[in-house]
Every structure is written in structure tokens, then in C-alpha cells.
Length: 178
Length: 178
Length: 178
Image (cartoon, rainbow over all chains, first blue to last red; front, side, top):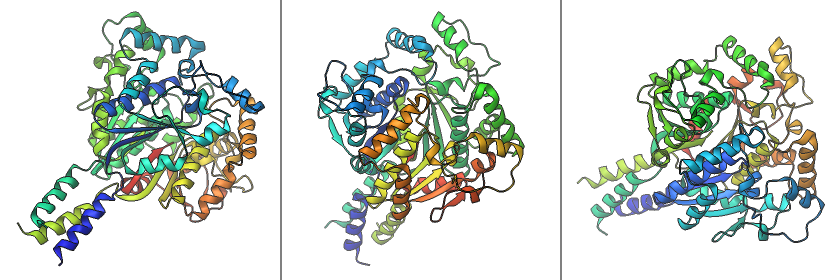
């Protein structure tokens, strides 16, 4: 047995092992307020514990990243329609259950304030401070006719494809789809 | 090359590797009957296969853990409202699709009985026997004004925060968000 | 310190480590068109990157695997009812949001075509070519009275239980529940 060779091979294997990084990757697919709150609480919690965190916003999730104060340039007809129909930014999101014509959503927001739970706006601020990375799915943006210039200001906001999420997920200790 | 040192360093690295435990961590966020059945079938299946299983109930999921026979003490106005509006216990949950004013939900329950699929009640019993751990999200309980004394009897039911879930998830081989 | 023994023990440990395979396991629980598209884009993307991919279709997800051109044999009353009520195949799926009596669903399908995003049919074809494995949950099929002969033609389509999913998930680098 060639100990040195065996040991070095094992080391290479361990280093290349998937899932071995102290990192969390999350797909944020949902357009529901409650799921966005959950994703941000998990993301900021993980970052606060020293994990590297990468969020990949796709489908309905992308609409939450729009900045209501920004205007996109010229769009085609369907892009304009989607832009009109989808919630413009995270403050327009509603609950997945008990929305009840706005009452449930307003109740939760009121409760969060009263109980000193951070609002979604504050959670995004904390996320930015803690270095949580936000990636937006290129295909979703293209499909819904959204443009990068109408997205929120966030450090190093990146537009990328599913391969980018998978590369992150593969080396992450934790992966979630929300 | 100092073989002993290298080997011992590699051993330390492998032991500290995230995701290396034969363990399953699951966030149960949903308030839908079908998703609760799925979560319990996965949890009891994993426990039966010898995995350590930790479930973290949050948001709508917490309502499923209420015991309809128990009374909570004094609550504030919003807590009372939520208590009234949310399903009281797992037997009040409904399907995410095809609820159809109760018909779909009743059909599934009837079918599960007929086909000898364990009911949600039985699955919780099995989970308890197999040592599946149940944690409840403190923030969700606080937000919805729920108290530990109105929760089901379950061995070592624990109320904790997101950091607890993340610590479990990080060392788990499998993590899911349902 | 017996180096040879220590090294060989560490090797065994590393080889048996859960989550160490370059593999993705996904539960496809949902019956929504958008989530099916997402699951297939992730699955084919991962397979294209050289990962082994195993999908486990359960609950509403199974309905998407029915082939509308095939007929199942005799069914009992509830099986017939479910067969009638659930979408027959992936081209009958609708969006989880903004279905709007079919308009939203038609818009997304139209957009995908226009933007050259592969349709769900094409994604299944690509998945088959790339060797993505499809497993169907036995209990779900039994519960909803579905039979293997009414399912789509797909290489090595397998009907199996939750234990099979867990065995895959445990050795996978990435696990998702959609």
C-alpha cells in the first residue's frame, strides 16, 4: 500500500465532494408574501450563522424583485401585459392562504410590525448587509418581458441561468425550493 | 510529507463536513392536507430506514399541530382572530387542489382509509414511535398568537427558531421545504 | 498510530458518506404547469451538466404523467372519478397563479413558443435523451386509481415507493421538493 498516494487521492476526493461547502442555495419560485418572508428569514439566518447564501429568483419570484419606483424602457405587448398584471415589487405580494381580499395580508403585516418581526424591506436590507447573493433567472425575465433596469438596487444583483443555480446547489450543504 | 499529520487533518475535515449525517431535515410550511400527508410519509419512511428525522413546522404548518381538545389561555385580539380562522388541528386541513367545498378532501380521506393508507393521525403516532423530532417555529407561534399549551401531545415537542433548523439542515444528508 | 488502518477506515467512511454523489433527486408533488416546467428545466439542466437525475412523481404530479391517448382498463368508481377530474396529461396542466380562466396559461405557452423556450413536451423528450430517470409513487397511483398502462411512454419508467426516493435522495448532492 502506497500510503502517500492513497492519502493524496483521498484528499482530492474529499475536496471535490459535492455538498461539502458551508453554503445554502435556494430557488425562490413563489410569488406569495408568506413564502418570501420565509425565504428571507432562512437566508438572513443562515448568513448570520456564517453560511454563504445564494438565492435564485425564478418565475413568480422575479416579480418581487421589481422596484416600483423604476420604469422599464419600451416593451412589447405581452411584456407590458405581464408588467401590468404581476405584483410590482415585494410590497404588493399577498399571502398564499387567507388573503381574504387583503385583510389577512394586512393583518400579517400589522402583526409583524407589532411583534418587531422585520418587514420584507428590512429583511432585504439585512440580506444585503450580510452578503446574501441574489441571482435572477434569465429565462423568467425574458419570458415575462422584465428588464434588469426595473429591478431593485441590490449589491451585485446578477442575471443568470439554471446552470448557475445548479453549480451553487451542488456544492451547498443545504438546498431548498420555495 | 508528514503522513500522520495529514491524515489527522483530513479526518477532522471529513468529520466537520456539512451534510455528512444520515439525517433528514424538513421545513413544513404548508397548511394543506396533501402536503402534510406527503411530509409525514417521507418523515416516517426515512425514520423507518434508520435516518434521524427533524421536522420544523412554520407559518401555516403550525396550525396543524394544534390539539382541538386543548384550550389556550388568554390571548390578545389578533391571536383570538387567527385562532378562530386557522384550521384547528390536522383533521381540519384541506387539499391544496380539488378541495371542491369539502368533497375532494373527503374523497381522499375515504380513499386512504379504504386503501389502508395510514391517516394523518396514525402517521403522527408512527412518527412519535420512530423518534421523528418535531420542532415548532417560535416566531410563527408568536405571530399567530399560538401557545405551546394548545399544541398536540408529542414526545419532546420543542419550540425553537430558524437557527435551530439551519443547524440541523446543515449536517443533514437530505433537506426539504414543503 | 496504525496509518494503514486509519487510512482505510477513513476511506470507507468517505465512500459511505451521504450526499456524496453528483446526483439530483426531486419530488414532483405539484400539479401546476409552472412548477412542472421549473422541475423539467432544473432536471434537464442538471443532466446536461453531467449529474445523474432522478425524479419522483407523487400526488398531483402523477396526473401530469398520464398519456391522453392511452386508455386504462376497468377502474372502480372513485378511480374513474379521479381520472375524470384530474388533468389528463401535461398539456392539460394550468398555472398556479394567474390562470385567469385559461388566459394566463395560454399566454405563458404562447410566450414560451415565441421565445424558443422548450415546451413541456420537448423537455420530456430532452429528459429522456439525457437519461433523466422518472419514478412514479406507487401509493399515489393506487390512491387515485391510476394504472401504469395509462402513463406516458418513457424509457425505464418505474413505479416505486417513498423508500426508493429516500435512498436516492440520501446519496444525492442536491434534493428538491417541488
